[in-house]
Amino acid sequence: MILYFFVPSSVKNLNQRINQSDPAKSDAARLNLFKEYADFMGRKLPENNPPLYFYWYSNQRKLSDLRVKEAIEEIENTRLEKNEIKIWSLLNMGTVIKTSGKTIAIDAANLPFSQAHNKLINLVDIFLVTHADGDHYDSTLLKKALDNNKKVILLDGLYGPEGKSKSINLKSGETKDIDGVKITAYQTDHRGDGNFNDPCAWYVVEIGGFKLLHTGDGREFKNKDEYQKVYSMKDFDILLANNQTHPYNIRDLRPKVLIPLHLFKFMSGNDLYRESTIEVVSENYSKYSKEMQGTEGIFLLPGENYLYTQK
Image (cartoon, rainbow, N blue to C red):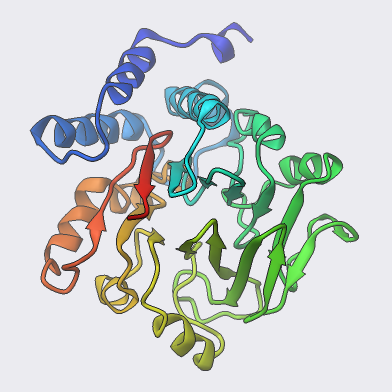
């Protein structure tokens, strides 16, 4: 029990350096911080899926918990103007979107043996889930949200912790206005596997005059007409994209701001982790810098945030 609660100085010191860093910068100090974080999170990481006991004592879980808890405290204390929207990156594809009127969480999920995300239940108005993988879908967290009369949005075919009795299920291509927030779901496969039997979604979110797209783990669309519809929009303020989203797709979507997610994915072991570091993702983007002109890229470490102001 003591080992679970003990937070070593290495975790505290790295967390402090992240808090002192400016996400809008891409100078040498920022790049060194990315490398330090990558080395820290990859230390003693099993090659394959870590055993459950790894999350009980690992510094990776302790740093992740600390980053999420501090982010939630910021979310609670942040007040925004009508022309502002702020995005927090949590873990994997987890994000919180806040405007002056509403707060939305997408793919918020606790790590094993963690309750760091739980305070979101008191702060978030609408929870969206892209698919059923454990790092996106947290049944315990969602049940608590439903018990507290929060809205939970799922793609049709994916069931909430209490079936369809309380959650809101959207058919692919369907738009619902939920307390002034327009949400549209589009069914995709999972990481390009071509399987459309298991529900997986992209979400278009229109909130407070802003338009965002969150890709979850999706890549290919089930409905090609819906694919054409999304890619013809070209008016997204912010694209919250899986790091595996190809630069050509980013080019065709033409968002004003790109925030890559699913970075530092240590839950699947060292093999997939190495593909998800900022160093690897940014190197891939740099090969397509011409195609991605006109889009501002912002790399966020877990717990960091980005403020976007409408001009």
